[in-house]
Length: 259
Image (cartoon, rainbow, N blue to C red; front, side, top):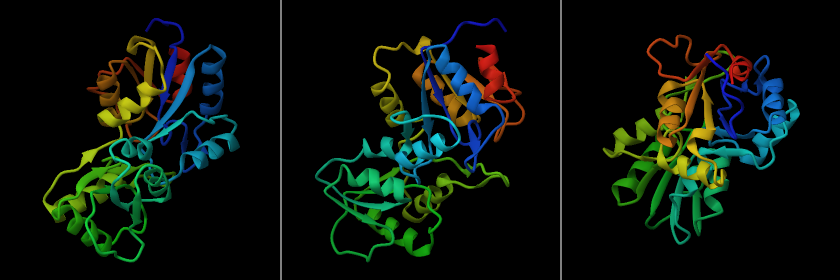
């Protein structure tokens, strides 16, 4: 494939592209430095809503990637679907609770004592404390009229020891319990696209590339944005057969070599 010169913006997934369980994938740190040296703006676009953005920035700094102001999470995207006057039940990690707390007037975490009254929205994301009681409270609020919002619907989450159930598995359990579908905020959905565009100024889709390890998530997100897609084979996707990715590489470093 012919090289096309560096894009103005690179949207880069984190888990499975930059790192696994915060352990850098070989060549990824240098690849980001090479992109920036060529003048590309790099935004890290992750469906992980459990970790606050500032903690993600710190973790990237610790492996040698400066990232202040460059991390966009599905928690931030979900917050765009909540209004300031609303009362919200958050069934998710610290990152999701913190982000929704910046918008909504009253936020109740899934581990808080069960309060009385009506919820305007239930926002669900990945968290390791999920159990029957969390599912019951969320379903009850949704059946009673609360809007059902999911930070993301990824079925699995990549780790060094292989995939584990992701936020989508939790969302699916609650959806069955309340017989309703969630409005999803993260990749490849509209709220995350709006969040990305708010950080890209006048950059055209043709000047952007989305780099990710999931065709169903990152590839579809590139399609929604109208930009090119680079598929890495370093985690979830191991066989690119059937993909319409513009670039395919074993790792982010391979992708940077191509572009």
